[in-house]
Image (tube, rainbow, N blue to C red; front, side, top):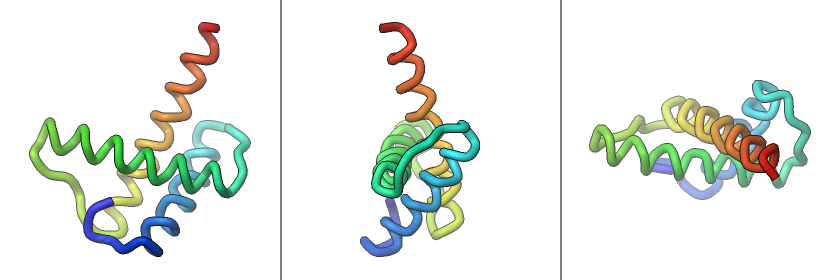
Length: 84
């Protein structure tokens, strides 16, 4: 995540993972929410960086990106798991 420290990254990851969990009607634990939120933010920041050359900064911007990214990760997991 850009522009925030490690502690704030964990807080944003946990909050984003929890919100994504509620949006996607999933059931995960706290650690999974943190990991989903952080990985979602990293993946979506990378994609936005490639497409637009920049991404949103600050707490709110990174929270929105992390929520969208975590939701995409949950959706992708369900799509792969459903095919097996």
